[in-house]
Length: 427
Image 1 (tube, rainbow, N blue to C red):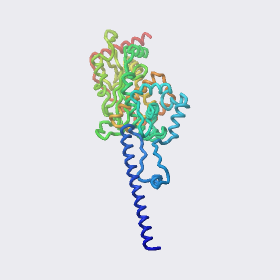
Image 2: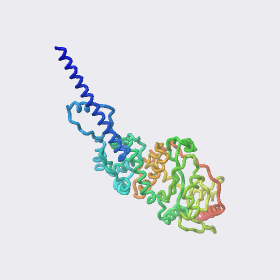
Image 3: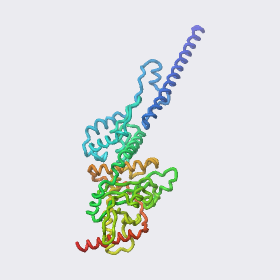
Image 4: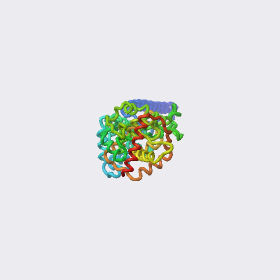
């Protein structure tokens, strides 16, 4: 072959190589720009959705550049089988027992909840993908709250990205708190509550109060404040419940190191009870003592004219009878906490949410507890057993007794003690 021909062939190959390299560079630049544009849209509209991003030219892209195949726009949907599981199996095939086991409520209650939350959960589709339906987001949130499953496990179950689960939980929890908390966690019919506790043995009682510790991961800042007397990180939920175990007032967010009495004294409930404006003015006479509507607490709470707690120390038969009556009625709050955590088992394991988000999720679970109780949702056998197994890792701290009391409160408690003894003798 002539030297000139060889040189011409080499130059031709070099020119083709430069052309191919130029095509590669152009394709990569366009891909980069498209990914950046899609990412901006994603951040604006659908935070938390996993993106499929490439790190360089792939075989398909090279073939497109060489003109061997037609370019096809990349799709962002994944795990179609799991999506079908929600759309075609859960929504269309599952019976009520399956809904109850997995979402803690029947399908009709679930759909009603979605309707109530729809004003806060409506989302628009983006160019990248269709927004998750309200029903699917609520289902993801309930599934995560009802189980100790990981975010990855729930994501695989519903065919979404792991971060989508976290986003859905907070979106739904905030919607529940914003739209339903003040409608569902409320005092309601005070006379019905008083009559309910009277039937259980304690007169003119408007509720039972207690606190419970929700385990959390140690916060980065001021973590020592969250270590309770059992030695683990926690956040305190204080709740007042009625005779049926429904929450009528909650306070959540205090670090686990804080004593129940301090949480109570700094709550809005304490201020309103102290001012005499929480309950309607409904007083009765016990012996010769005037008694307002009271709430019942354990020894960790101060004895007040409107808060009765058990006798401590040496007990005679009359004091034991008083304590029995009070304890029998006060058990409703402990049972309420038990049912709350058995339904929403995520409260039994350490939450990895930020300290500012944990109270929102706990409050949302309290609302969901009340909804389930109001709707008469079945509390299934086995839930409590599983809850007790999980709770064994995070035993509730013992609370120190508070011995401060007001003279008027002592007189009321003594009058009640005498009344209970008289009723016992007459029966």
